Image 1 (cartoon, rainbow, N blue to C red):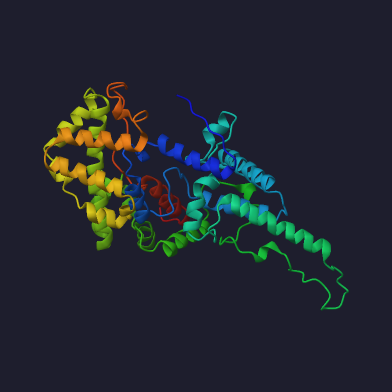
Image 2 (cartoon, helix red, strand yellow):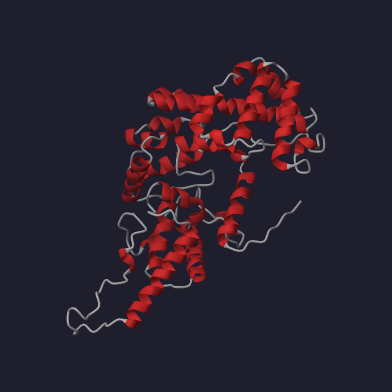
Length: 399
């Protein structure tokens, strides 16, 4: 069923698009409402990342373009954002033309179809830019645009009203730097060439790679992300997914090892719930789900024997008491080998989240029994972080 909405600002539109992104990404589907824990562990391990980030270069393209627009003197917010959107689209086209590696170019598919994306690089990377203190403010992109346009307008008014006579007495002449937007430091970025756009490539320069590495290490020093970069652990590049990270987890500090163990345990438990969820909504006819459950059955009590209290503590999940109750009830049902009760708990959870009209579990058997709903195991943005690490290492020349 197609859906639509009316938005009154770019900011409101982006909020809706972020929700739709979660529904379109297999790794982030949240049919049972456990996002607080998923995102909590993701932020512990790989802060500043998201499931739709692609390449590290965008941590620089966004500020380069916005710094150029800051100096343009634009005072109209809508025009400022429109020009910025056009620059981002032009960057994508230039990436396609100039880069030997076109993997991860945002908007590539849309551009080839004569369109441009609704979720722009700035939307996708803004949180990371703030996390790494590259953007030195808590403003959103629209708020930042309004601030810049306001500063430019005040600067223009100052110039019109001021005394610009260089021959005036010292105490009467205008300060040449008065109203200069460069005195407002929104950005902390490396020195870059004003002609950066002309030779644009998706790969990081050495200067950019070293800068981003330093930013991540200094702003997220307790994270696995920073630890890998600071201690140069190339072994992580051989891990195909978050689960395989267990092969090298002993290389990390004890606290990270414990967090990893909690996150991995929760991923396994959540996966069991997702398997049962697919059995419920297919009315027992999803053969894939049935086979997986049969394979897991001999170990389900071990899978459910997880430290939920510590998981809640590490991810601040106590702020969502209904989710905590759902998980505790599910754990108890599994440990009691009461799968019938587990199915009811899962059904009630989805109905609570979505209402009986939208909850699939309220309409068992009405969906394609060969289709899988709700995603698989949780990887906590591991794949996206690896892409960023790879770009940094290649930029520095470490691989």
